[in-house]
Length: 96
Image 1 (cartoon, one colour):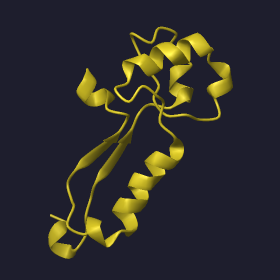
Image 2 (cartoon, helix red, strand yellow; image 1 turned 90 degrees about the horizontal axis):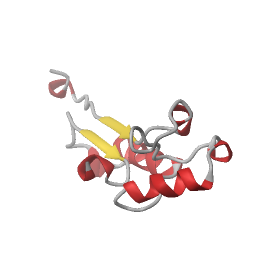
Image 3 (cartoon, one colour; image 1 turned 135 degrees about the vertical axis):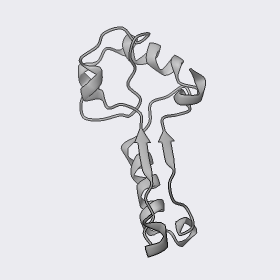
């Protein structure tokens, strides 16, 4: 309905943040996929086991999420994109 007015609406779905991860201790139940200032709170073993669950075998960086937002908001190549959700999660959504 907004496209006719030149408005595009998209969604960026980053992997969950480390803030959310602190609520859970078992990476098989819940994973965190984007690095944040909470990194120091999580054990190396936990991070290693979580990274193994991610197809790219590493956690994402905030700049990678911001890059997708920047692309959708500012790049002329995104002018014809509307009504989509973009997962920025290292492939975890397709790896489940």
